[in-house]
Amino acid sequence: MIRMKDIIREGHPTLRKRSEEVQFPLSQEDRKLGEDLLEYVINSQDEEMAQKYDLRPGVGIAAPQINVPKRIFALHFDESTGENLSMIAVNPKIVSHSVEKAYLTSGEGCLSVDRSIPGYVPRYARVTVKAFNLEGEEFKMRLKGLPAIAFQHELDHLNGIMFFDHINSQNPFAEIENATPIKQDLGE
Ligand code: 4LI
Ligand code: NI
Image (cartoon, rainbow, N blue to C red; front, top):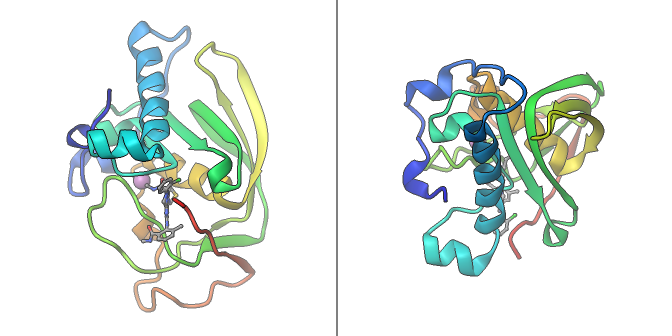
């Protein structure tokens, strides 16, 4: 089971590396990695589990965040987030995206960042993505809203990019052209 002590924090060099593609068929180890990542996000959203094991809540976590530089991440949204999506994405990619952008009005948080970094993080409003599941089957889907933002946040981790790299350093709350603000209440 992944705990907060297993999650590396900003400043660790692995968070700045490009992670390696995963080869199929998946090794037992890679399969376990994917399952553990999904288990973390599910448990972290369960108040009892989160308290008991001191897990910070998240909707996404990527393998490099536990110091494994492989192209795998997990996302989980349940009814309480107003979405219903759970995935383990292996070798994920964005195949196309909207011109329109979107951003969370409350900014973004990251399990590898222990401080709150204010500012708008511009993302594509809609993305069409492709990835493989643990069985090695390719899937394709269209995402919008928070799932689209989270997918881009986690894909960035596989490329050594942190969310704050995207924040306007002159003015963190500068208006973003052609963007929809997303007011998201999570956690209740
Ligand atoms: C409890 C139970 C307010 C502040 C609002 C909590 C279940 C911030 C938002 C959650 C913010 C759940 C989240 C992300 C933000 C803020 C991630 C709470 C889990 C809110 C997820 C990857 C950015 C994703 C919306 C600095 C660890 N998650 N909030 N950003 N929630 N959560 N991100 N932003 N301001 N990060 O953090 O999983 S994309 Cl679901
Ligand atoms: Ni993150």
